[in-house]
Amino acid sequence: MRAEPNLPPEALAAIRAPFLAAGAEAVDAPILQPLGLILELAGEAMRARLFVVQAEGGQETCLRPDFTVAVARQHLDSGKAAGRYFYEGKAFRASPDADRPEEFRQIGLERFDDAGASAVEADAQIAALAWSAAQAGGRSDLSLWLGDIALFAAFIDAQGLAPALADRLKRGAARPRLLAAELARAGAEPQATADSGKLAGLLSGLSEAEAATVLEEVWALAGIEPVGGRGPAAIAQRLIRRAQAASAPALTLEQADSIARFLAVDDAPQTAFTAIRAIAGAKAPALDTALGDWTQRLDLLAQAGVPVEQTRFATALGHAFDYYDGLTFEVRSAALDHDRAVAVGGRYDGLPARLGGDAGRRAVGCMVRPWRAWAGGES
Picture 1 (tube, rainbow, N blue to C red):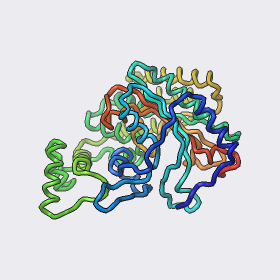
Picture 2 (spheres, rainbow, N blue to C red):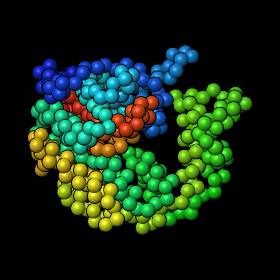
Picture 3 (cartoon, rainbow, N blue to C red):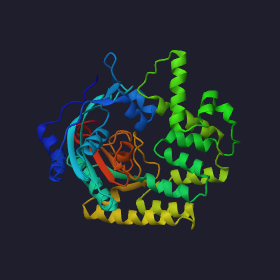
Picture 4 (cartoon, rainbow, N blue to C red):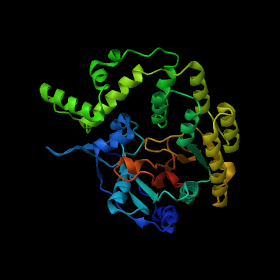
């Protein structure tokens, strides 16, 4: 496994300092994480980047690819409604590129608030924290890229789509390949359910619990022992969605063009917001509200010392994990490829509920890669 080099202690301390000043509780997270859960949250495409570990007869696990899920689970186990947690440690992701480390250090903070907390203020504080820590590494070529998955959801709601189609597009907001496939299907006739696969077609008429039971019975009759970290419920849900997607109405060419133009917006924030309003037209009051929140976020970021001229808004900005459902951001260096962000973060209000917690809570966090932040590091 290729390991990232160590930083000089003084450089690491400088990058760590803004996190320590935030007054968060220091936590650690188990290196081994449940494989099935990570795949459910990140999607099947993440499997190739995971280091899978399984003891004989035991549950499949993986080396932690990130800290967010693990820290969220620890917060839920604590029973507290709110909490701020600082972490620092190694994460592990496989890479086909020989020049990329597969073991690397992350420093981050995850923030959990009750439903009454201001999401806009928390978003700005977290993004400003990531900016401060990234800047502490000494690079002078940084920029802050902003996005918002909730803005995409508001735009989709304004298109008057069938509910099933709208929900599928929203689920694909953080997965470019799924969105690209949906846009490519525009104007096509729905397929017959049977054409999408006999088993998937059968399961699509059942509830998820019934479908999981049928799948278990099929495995038992065939003598199949499932592998890969996913249980029957998760596999059944995936098959059902595939069948529903194939048989559901497709976007019209006009709708697909509107969505494609929205996803292509990438400019200075205020210019980007003007373009979004022009594409959406006057039929999107929820979109107007979301854009109004962004004016407040930008004001708060400027007050926190983030230079507005070094910010950019991209509607298609997403992350490897698809649990983000609001703000997304990256701190980038001009010296590094765009997929080697110095810092990343965003809002994931829905994740605690997906992990078994109460719905309606708020969650946002960020992570910095110190080696990339350091001016003497990756180039």
